[in-house]
Image (cartoon, rainbow, N blue to C red; front, side):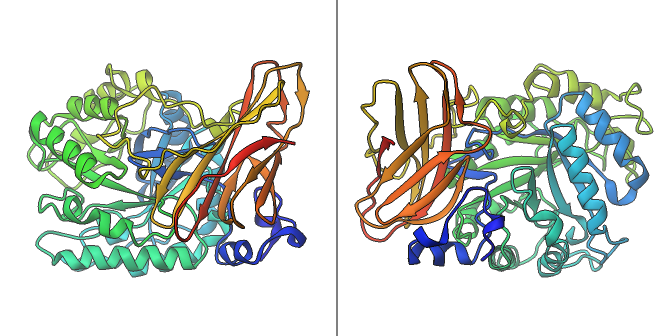
Length: 465
């Protein structure tokens, strides 16, 4: 265990054995997390992906400018095409590190995907999910510590058509387990089978089984919407059924305004409209460089990577009522004044999932007249829970705060963010982080805690120290 990897402070002399064991197998990093059908950023605020795909693997010389240009149209995310080296030139750790840093400089989230898996089981040249995990492990040093800024899309469109569903299910279960065992605590993104389009409904019917393999309960699912979704109703039906039945986060990881195979118009406006209504993410394909199919150029957003030379598709995704400029909001981790927990992203429709595990016991607040704290169970599942704690200053400006979460028994913590924590018996003392201790009158700071439990769950109470 390396204490230096922790986002807060876990002094060894005060750590209970259960906490040590829980953190020993993972880096206990902050980062994106999942609550119901929502993706939460590192501050615990809902984050709705609004982004673009960029084919870095084939257009490495264009990447720097593409990132700058995509940022200028208000995207909050870019999905970056990488290669594990199994089909194309391997994307080096150095390249990935540089991309992440540039993305952070432009206040955008990076979704990294291995493209070599595309069509596995049907495409003979495609690599397996197991090979994709080999790649992620090979560049682990530049990914760990970036959990606030990076989402790992394990493999692009990792299964082709008419492949046994167990290949998709078991392949992802094994991949998720391997990544967690290797110490990756990032949010993981899983692409649908059938070249991403899930026309056989394998992901729709089996996503919960795959999600259950994630010990951190931190997996989102991605469907790619092209010719299988030719009408507005087909888009709406899939999204509604996934959110209602599976109760898991969904992202439209790729879509376009026209089908590259036959040039027919696709309901891209509906994809954006439904995504906005349901609070789910979307990433259009792609910034530029498409080729190979008869109508490939129809899915370029720019002509020749030139920002001032948008295609009709580019103009639509950028300037539509539900497009990037109108709807994209950056992750609050880029705003040091926003420490999270209070913003629901303006969207109360989470696909019919308002259940926090049937638990209405959300702890208590302090009776201190100037500083108060409140703890809420923001998510609960079998054997685990997530807390959102809000500290509010009702008096004169303060320069630091400290509170105690008081449990009925010694807690087992798995992860935490936006505070420095010390475990002492049945209490967890939390002090402000370096960036959220100063609170003016009426201002609040929030932090999060994730833990595990046995038996019956009961939320802790909170008091100001």
